[in-house]
Length: 541
Ligand code: F6P
Image (spheres, rainbow, N blue to C red):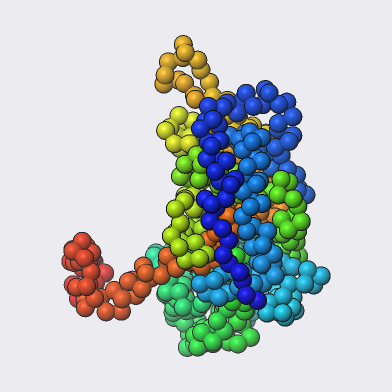
């Protein structure tokens, strides 16, 4: 279906101008005073969705700011864009593709369609392969070339083909199969793949090659090294077609050409963007690790968030509120970054995952109309788990010269921890957020001991880090990113900015000495330096 892409430029909207006018006065307001003036503030500025609770009352916003932000959402093309995305329209205009990832967690009654055709059956089929393969592996029925069951899985992929599964396997380790170990290798750095395989038994190792395009050079390089290892150690001649190798891709032809057995190729669809693909067969390692039932619970949690997003008025809509607060800070208070700080070690990879989701989606400077934008888009997203972060960069958050809005995330219950640890952990989160907002000191305080306070944060609590809540959490951020992209009137679903670097690497790798002469002086010097000093170069020996 055709997508009528041209939303208004946000800067042309009346609400944008209201917000510009409110900007100066808000910087003089104290968040603490706003609490004193309105004892109901924390209740009013919180949202509960199922087992997720968001308290956004510690933000640098008053009633006027919130109502202008909501007006901005109303005046933008957000409602139309939301309808378009869920209707399978070709919202990725530069590649003429839909971004129908919610259909991956949809049920038949959600009626997701693409070009007028229902997609549910297609999704069901591809997930039933995930279910059947993960069951066989978990039950010890998937056998390697010497008849032994799988004990280790190495998932090879990069970006969207790896970050989601890696993060999910770590986050949901409480549900992991005790006798199966999942390893992830994404980097082209040979030390990763070579040291990973060194510690494993090839007879009981399964390699998953995950790549939407099945052309990504890092993944192919790692795949070839892993296959060589299998061949050298198992005496196989075409290990890629053995039961030791599974391919996951949207490009079946390329996986077949690579030599993977047709029955061991799991497909997903072109309309699934790489960074939105953990819900598809790319999630196979998640299902292997936590079991298909738990994988389904993750999909259900994400679907519940889709429903919340689609049906809840903007003022009670979690992704919309998070997105609007982000726009307030980036576009009006000129913050350059946002920090995501989970107080849960199993969410260590959440900031990394969100970096791709947010920065690859919305790190754009042209509008959907192809014009340069004159406003800031995606913030620089960074973060680390608390309490470690407290002993590293929190000094800057409390007393530095940057204003950094923060998303604090925690699980209220943690069956893997105990009361003593968990209370301490959550008290740290509460104390830090309170300290950042409240600050401390007066005129008599030595300046180095002064905490200026008024630093904003959101606190997002999940009851427990269950598959369902984890799914909801990831979908929450997906929709947040979508809302921001929609208001900024940019295409959140392409990633042209990563192409040039790939092309130049390819050029250097394929005809090194010839093409280096076409590069600038610095690149030529560095290349020469590497060439002269490398110990690995064969022509130096
Ligand atoms: O970094 C660019 C990118 O295309 C991402 O969008 C994608 O997730 C990643 O590379 C991997 O791509 P593929 O799944 O095709 O190997």
